[in-house]
Length: 399
Image 1 (tube, rainbow, N blue to C red):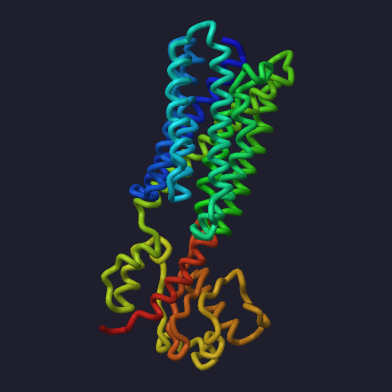
Image 2: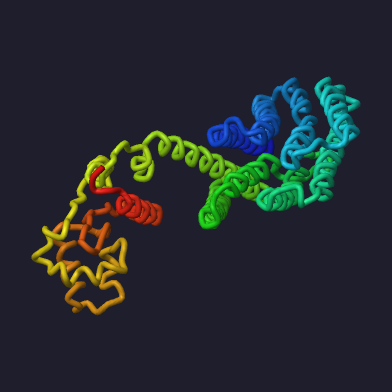
């Protein structure tokens, strides 16, 4: 096997694994969604292409290499199926027949592997795929935006950008068109697209964070691949490109696997909000007792006004009237450190080794002091505490 063939195999196998993980993630999020089913079909076709092709190149099997033409020829059909789902309407009948018939004919022609037809079939397959993508792009571009929701129109815009970016990667898969390419990058482009799809389904702030993490993964893995290439003697530019492609594909695949497994583990263990939502508690005390089972609240202690006589309740009432959740690192909370109310609150938190003070009521005073572990002190936990505080404040003392 040549270095180029080894790199092609690894990148394609990574692509197959990454797309399979993406399929599991999408199915877990929306198992019965009509668009999800269409996405799973399209991703399944592409994943099978990468798997068969990567295995063929790694094993040197001519039969598998020929059979890979079948899923390759069906890729435009998968793209058309997804396009119809996004637009929520059927594509023109002529386009559907042409893409289906063309996929079958070209796929079978490639699978038969007649030596005189290898090059013409490869060129025809490349043109057929580009024509299929062009038809899908035309259907998306000529849609009536008024018939779709704003979120759907935004998704189509992102899809169009992703398609434009992935086309150069797809072209590298055809050595007939680009014979001197060091490594085929179609699978790498697919990994980038599915990563972007999963990011796009998150909230705006989470999208920015996930995008930053993805850029960090890609950049650091590229640097790692470039550095690893110089381990071998007589390294050249082509070898550096191969190592970078392998490293990026591997890191993106590992990232998809880790994110999917983390989401699975989180779904098995209820968080704070899930615990509150599922709790049958009818009173505030019962709900607090239920929360005490959660690690963050296991050290929590509730203080009513009668238990705060040593801290001057009359002074605390005015201070707590405009505050909901106090964090000890934020002290003195826009006041002077010598302010009597600040001193008493800080003293109360230190007495309980607390990092947070949740204010349920300021008149009469009703607060919860708790210590949030450093490893859990993130924005998500802060938001959860604010929401739990609101739920507790709305829960009656007695039924």
